[in-house]
Structures are given as structure tokens and as C-alpha cells.
Amino acid sequence: MRVLLVEDEVRLVDLLRSTLVDAGFAVDALMSAGDANEALALGAYDVVILDLCLPDGDGLDVLASARRGGKNMPILVLTARDAVEDRVRGLDAGADDYLVKPFATTELVARIKALLRRPGHALGTTLEAGNLLFDTIGRDVRIHGDTLALARQELSVLEHLMRRLGRVVPKAVLEERLYGMDDELGSNAIPVHVHHLRRKLAEYGATCAIHTVRGIGYLLIEEPS
Image (cartoon, rainbow, N blue to C red; front, top):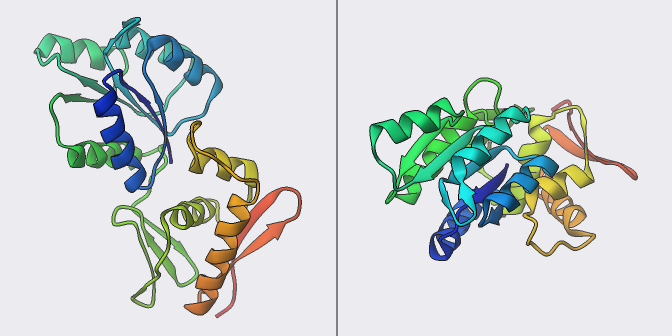
């Protein structure tokens, strides 16, 4: 899942980016309303975390602009404004949730996952493909009760393939969803992750397999046991 984080406190940005990456998200972090508006106009995000007090404008204006532009992803507002009327203004402008600073990072991650589990959004609780079970909350994958030892990016690749079971997922889509705009990305990064995934799925006797659609991307298919 790809997150847009809009926050101008450098230390908080570093903390939240690290927390979100550890939770399995790809993060683009921006520090101004202008950059946020541009990113929302050009990019596709699964969720937005938006501070209201930005150096070049009010986050509520960014929020309102996104909704006017037809952006319907969940938007969680971060702010030090804790008055009831401030929260009402944010929710009326189109915010899906509201978190007052200071807050625990564990609560932020839990709220984001709760938003993504709402009908019409990106995150289901448990994914299945053949004998493969993926707990998207606990971030673990099991076959017959055995947990597969998967690296973070391998988990992300597998999640995207399982969410589109039986459909081709373009390599470019995986790159966009797994990596933030500041991440270094080699041309063979996705093929390497897929290679490791194939080997581990075979080792554990998975009844699904990843197929390469040459020149396009990858396809996860259930196979007879």
C-alpha cells in the first residue's frame, strides 16, 4: 500500500516514515501544501496522512482540493488543534479520521489499517490463494499452519498478487506501490523479489504459483494440489 505523508516537522516525518515502512507501506513524504497538491494530482495513493499546519497553507485546503478533484482515498488528518469545532471542520471538509498530536505511532498504524479495511478501500483482513493464507494485520503468511519467512518487500509483492488473483499485475504497478519517490530502485528489484517468492512458495508446498507475463508483469494462479 502506498502512503502520502504530508508533515513539516522533520523529526516526526522521520519517525512516521520508519514506522510506516516497518508496517509494510511505501511512503512518499512531503512537507508543503503545494507539493502535496501536485503529488495528489499526479500520483495514486491508497491513503493520505495530512497535517493541517503547513508552512505554505492550511491542510484543510489540500483536503478540500483533493475531494473536489475526485480523490476518494482515505485521508487521516494530523493536528495539534484539539477543539471540537476544529475536528468538525476537518471531517466536514472530507477527512475520514482525525488524530490529535501527540499520539502513539501504533495508534496511527492501527487507524490507517482500519480505514483501509472499510468497504471499497484497499485492505482486507485475510487473503487466500490455494492453501496460502495472508494475515494482512499481523503481516504473516501461512501454509498448513507453517509461517513462511518472507522479507518485507516479498510480503508486499505477494499481497498485491493475491489481491489480484488470476489477473496480471504490471511490473510498473508493483514498483510504484512498493517504493516511495525517494527510494532507490534497480531495474531488477521486482524480478529478484519474485524469484525469492517462487522459491519459498515451492519449498512450503503452496498450491499457487507466480507466472511471468513477459514484457508486462506477473500473475498469481491457483494450481491443483
